[in-house]
Length: 321
Image (cartoon, rainbow, N blue to C red):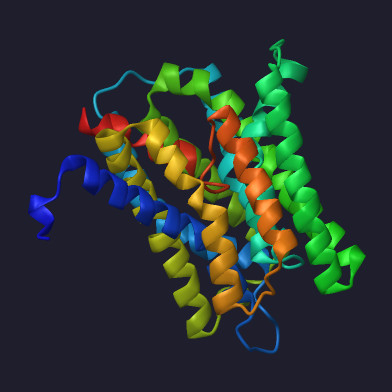
């Protein structure tokens, strides 16, 4: 069927599926980059630096275009931008990249996918919100699923210490992103979504570059061609394009349907991990994935990737208004 003859809803569904596919491939790109044969494997800081360098120009340009002729920001706004930029795009991403050095892409995706339930916990513990029975049920389902997937990785890896370290870093990434999401809503209302996105991206990029300069020699940026290709692929196919596709899908089919399709992400990561990385697949892993997805769908707040994901897609929506 010719593209121009597609209905708006069908096109929206296709874009949402492609976005979920792109987001799910982020962990695969990271694991492939780590596996490139060389004397000293690429480290997480260098890889994140390359990802940010390749993707931030696009978001900065979009933010500049959306923020022309707007009033200057105050001190409170800049404080929020710095704090949330460090939490979301820098903190969550670096913890995630470190964790992927220890655990499978499949377990990483499932742990990250619990950030909507973590956002609920943050609201209950720090913002005076009350959790409903449905939300408590979602929490129990999600963490039971993580337990099953965690047991699978322990059985396969045979190294409890490594799995615990990796899971801890990735869970820290989910916590960091949950705090970011909880704090970003009032900032977005004050500043506008695209403007906030661009400035938070620049803060995150600056923090990543500073981290690299402090911890790595300049020669660490000299990597084999496959590492550059994986980082570029991550920036284009797992960051920039999915964000625009998500924005377009939301306009055509709504946020709820787009988010529901986003639940394909962990399943796709499990599939690609088994196919491209040779990660073992088991009934425990699939059962864990099913429980996590059920928990996330139960509260109807579905996250799509740490560092640029669900919120960034929504952030571009005002550009077409």
